[in-house]
Length: 227
Image 1 (spheres, rainbow, N blue to C red):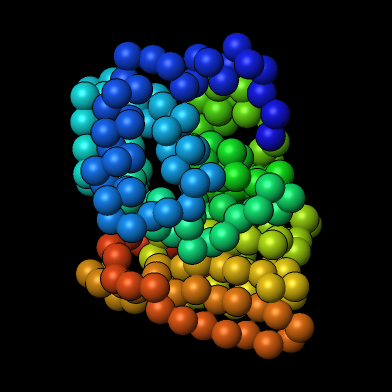
Image 2 (cartoon, rainbow, N blue to C red; image 1 turned 30 degrees about the horizontal axis):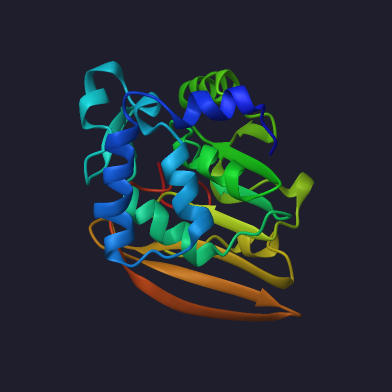
């Protein structure tokens, strides 16, 4: 994504920049995140614009926050941790399952060429689109649908990230993953405890490994949790 220098200045320099810098240093870098592209994206994106006005003063705290309709904006460290392990390159096409408030979507835009984001809840999708458009992000396609079924029209994707938990990684999303070292991250587990599972797809072979424990809201849909 390319933005004007004026927009870059507006995003990067505001009265919350000190809080954002402190968040990155104490919550992300100190816990081992080293990818400089990920770190710079977190320094740039104004997280306080992705929460309700009543939560602005908590926007840079070390925890998830509610964004309405039973959904949350994830803990900053968990987002950074997953993005680092996704190993996004600037030419990649990324599929995001769970647009939410659009915060992670903005981060993905900073790291990749194109972002395709799917959100089940129409209100969240529309609000995120309005917010991201105001911030100047144009390399995003939005879809309001069952996220467990992905977005077959534009597959394959070099990277896929799922921002909600599922009993298993949806098979349809694995099918939509690039066969050229494609990487997919999905929180797998039960209602109370999950683990981030990484799926790597290469030349017909599927490899899975566990990146550690986490807690996410449920991924509702045909290949996730029943509504």
